[in-house]
Amino acid sequence: MELIRTLTQLVNNLRSLGIRRRVAVVCPNDPHTEYVIIRSLREEIAEYLLVTDEAHVEIAHNLRAASPDFVRVYITSTPDEAAALAVELVRTGEADILMKGLINTDNLLRAVLKKEKGLLPPGGVLSHVAVAQIPLYHKLLLFSDAAVIPRPGLLQFRAMIANDIAICRKLGNDQPRVALIHCSEKVNEKFPHTLDYVQLKEEAQLGRFGSVFVDGPMDAKTACDRHSGEIKGLSSPVIGNADIMIFPNIESGNTFYKTLSLFGDANMAGMLTGTIAPVVVPSRSDSGNSKFYSLALACMAGNQND
Amino acid sequence: MELIRTLTQLVNNLRSLGIRRRVAVVCPNDPHTEYVIIRSLREEIAEYLLVTDEAHVEIAHNLRAASPDFVRVYITSTPDEAAALAVELVRTGEADILMKGLINTDNLLRAVLKKEKGLLPPGGVLSHVAVAQIPLYHKLLLFSDAAVIPRPGLLQFRAMIANDIAICRKLGNDQPRVALIHCSEKVNEKFPHTLDYVQLKEEAQLGRFGSVFVDGPMDAKTACDRHSGEIKGLSSPVIGNADIMIFPNIESGNTFYKTLSLFGDANMAGMLTGTIAPVVVPSRSDSGNSKFYSLALACMAGNQND
Image (cartoon, rainbow over all chains, first blue to last red; front, side):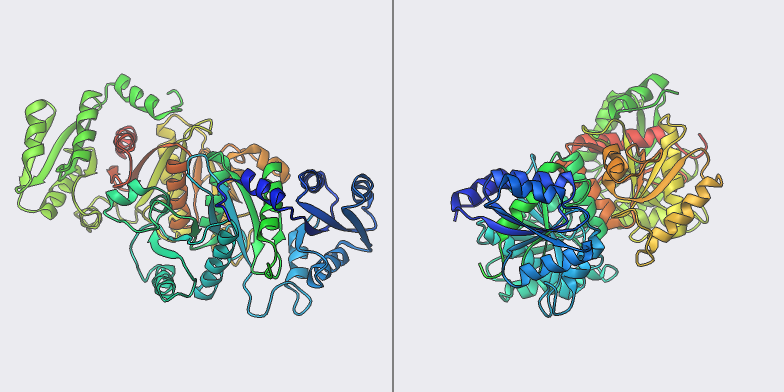
């Protein structure tokens, strides 16, 4: 398939493929969620299974009235029951994607992570992936983890890399370039993640992640700016040309996300992965565009069986 | 004095004050350092004590030949001796600022941190401060630590805040707003820096840092975007209006620096502080502008006795 270079192209691509993903929404009871649902229905990229508690049925009923062919409504007693039912709809294959509405994120994640009844396969690692469309970068940039894993260890780094690579491939990139981020190029035992990076590079060379380039440690600028690498006498297929950035901790990943969206004038999409189906958890401070693109990203990622 | 809102204004302000700082440069043997020296001489904000090893005297001699009234040259046997002599010139009050040329940063810092013969007062904490002029922000933004302190503890957070506030005041800001950065607003013992933040806020309220506002934990976007705070139902004098951002670790501070300069189209300045005089350590991948503004920032910060 063609390489997807912008979030608009991602949406157009979904439309042209004629794929409508089935999205189970937990508590679609706020105007932001309503906006994403209406826009994605208009773009013809999704259909909806709206699961809401009985105290908040109005928006769900209105959405169904407007698009009866593409919206079904399920009513439960409580938001927690709505979360459990929506997860069950994904588990049983009736829905392809889970999306959060007006419910506490912790409560939603409790249902997602529930043993045997949740969405995380045995041994799976839940991680967050963000996709940024940055005016001053020449392609989409994926990165992890801005939201879920506080201090990745080797096992989690492996999962983050594998999860991000899988999404990169769905975006038409057959040989992703993965930058392992630090504040410099030096491997230093005082920073244990740099030791993990050495191991991960070796594993990548042995083929663990398939056809990829993995390099690091390097700082965020060196990953995306060839000139910075040249000044330091560094060159590799990754330097200045990263498709994926793996951050050493949640504070740096989150700072990258927030700085891009606020000062880099970037359009952002994000979702949870590692689960048997994508989970869309929009952040309150995301723009409407960002929330819609997050759903579109999940639609493109599809489920593990695609 | 007037509030300084841009780096150009900072330079103009120095000129109009008629201050020429005396800058001791260790090994001014590369074109980047030469550029900064020539530009600051032309702007009339500095005069120079160039300390170089005997194998690399050409640039220093040329600079002296061009500006004999404002350039002196000192020659030593080795770069390490040049570092020691330049530090000594600052210690004895013959220079106001130390600047790095073509010498390994670790070697320079060894001379700066040398007990009794270095530039760090007893009990002092060396930290890095950066000043960013960001097109999408309404004022200069200071932050720490992108370069020196890997994992600040309470003692180091205190020093970083105090160091940054001192510079903010030199830029004409009498009541700086300090944001303590994390990935969310939640205090959580799994993130020990958020517990330090609680303590630091209490200390600020008790007057430890003088006339300031200190708030956090908060993410980088909430610190600089009032709208993000409003959505979360948060408001304070700091939210959306930070003058200073304190990062929880070097990876997040460094990521902020690199992302602003690469994708935020920002002009950056930076220096080391906590020492008896500013130390300018330009990063190889900084632009020429950034290196010059770093020197100008140091000139404005002056020394502790100003």
